[in-house]
Each structure stands twice: as C-alpha cells, then as structure tokens.
Image (cartoon, rainbow, N blue to C red; front, side, top):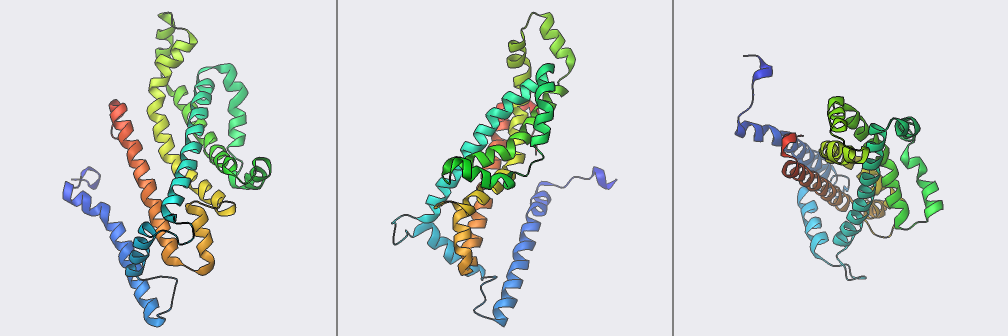
Length: 270
C-alpha cells in the first residue's frame, strides 16, 4: 500500500499529535539542566519547577499594591481588546466582501484599494494611530482592525466570486432582488468561510494586540511581558507566553466547534 493511502489509527494519531510537544519539552528540560548546572543563577532557561511555582503564584496571589490578581486583570483587558478588534473587522469584512464579490461597480471601486491597503505593514502605522487616537483603548483596537480587515475582505470577496454563477442566475429567474440574493444565496455560503478566515487571522490579531500593549498600556498580557523583561524574569514571561498560547488554542477550538455546529455541511475543517 502506498504511504499516501495509509491512515494512522486513533491511538497512533494521538501519539503523533503529542510527539512534537513532548520533544519540545524534553529539549527545553535538557537545555535548562545544562545551563543551570553551569550557572545555578542563570535566568534564561528557568527550571520547569520554577515556571510551575511562578504560574501558581501569578494565577492565585493578588498584587500587594492593587489587591488584584494581575494575570487575570491582564487577561480580561487583552481579551476585551481582541474581541472588539476582531468583531469590528469581521463585520466590516463581511460587508465589503459581499459588495466586492457581488456587485461589479463595487468591485471596480474597492478591490484595488483593498489590495493596496493589505500591503501596508500595520505595525508601521502604530505611531500614527497613537497620535490620532491617543494612547487609550481605541488605538489598540484600531490596529487590530486595520491589521486583519484587508485579509478577511479579500478572502471573503473571493469566496463570493467562487459561488457558481448558475445559483445567482436561478435566484434572479425566481424574481430575487440584489438584497435577497445577498442575504439568501451569498451570506449562508460565506459565513462558514468567515469563521475559517477569522481562525486564520487570529495569530496576526494577537501579534498586533501584543505589540500595541507593549508600546502603550498599563494593563494587558503584552504590557506585562514587556514590563518584566527588564528584570530578565523569564519564568514570568514564559508563563504569560504559555497562557497566551492556551487562550489562542481555546478560541480557535471554540470557533471550530461553532462552525461545525452551525454549518455541519461544511465538514470538519482544519
């Protein structure tokens, strides 16, 4: 049997999925042991037990000055910014994607503009955003919106263009207006793609969020990471990085489940 036709059993699939993570943990433990053996005061690769103790402290002990558990406060602030940015970007992209993909006049007007905007590095606009919107919440949310909206728009507009033209013709034959075609023919077919596109854009959204928080914020996951870096507190940094990774995984899993429940005909997806 050709290798391309071989499929792993369930236990083997689970083992293969876990193997890269296990190898990374083993490599880290070996590197940490070697560095700590050479210098017990080394801070670059803290021992796994140190990271665990730090994580327990960050998740459970309140700050002495504010009385808040800082990790939870940072998580809440970052998730609010992320949800606002991604939500606004999704709404704008859905509207523009339908217009560009469905209406030739809108496609001529906006497709080139969106393509050019998508080439602008969003992080290069960060100083401008701080000047225009200030150092508060708005600039951080706007950076996420600017960063992922062009990608989402181009993806959705292409998906609208990929809808078989026969479906549009049949809807017009039955007397459907442009608005009805958009709502009853186009929208149901691109909503699953919207969720998939958001899943793919989440990595970039997190990047823009962390960058904005690192430059100007007084609370947030990115702010805390860049605050403690000056003390070489790698145990805190690694805890926050692992927590961000976990949050990103949970959000991605939730979106995948939502897509599977709401649009079962689309298949399992990624």
